[in-house]
Image (tube, rainbow, N blue to C red; front, side, top):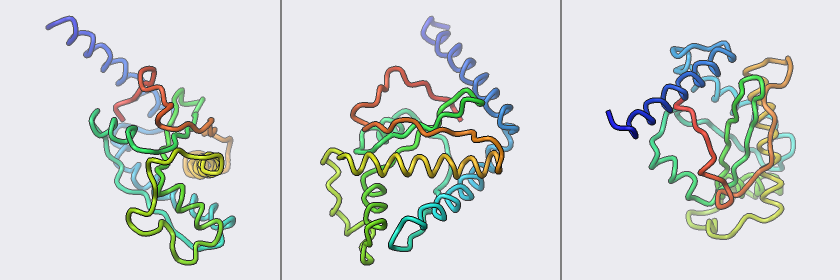
Length: 184
């Protein structure tokens, strides 16, 4: 076994131990991971309910499949124009990163200001190369706060808050080198 392979194996073991600790702190097992899709679906329902109170237009958001990704797909996510909002879970010793792409951010802005049935616009109508402005940053922070509270409702019930929304940053400013990922 080469030195690089040994280092990679050691890092994977550290990641596995971290993943096990996070799951244990959450009261979950590896087998419970399959149920996370239902947890995030419930969180998206709570999230929509929270946003409906501040929006002029009715809308619905649905969580897609929960699945692991490889390095190339992960890099592709970070290469797109998006805002990253960290949701810190101190009791779990980790951070969940929410990425809000331009289509999501602009759709929520449209809904909040009365979209007249044009939520998300037509295909190609979102300028993904334009940097996010102050309004988009504030809306993303609002989305992160609502998602943190929705996840709290699912994971912690009405008990002590588990997730705290951190400061939103653009993917172009995200430090990929000092970012630790779990294999969850």
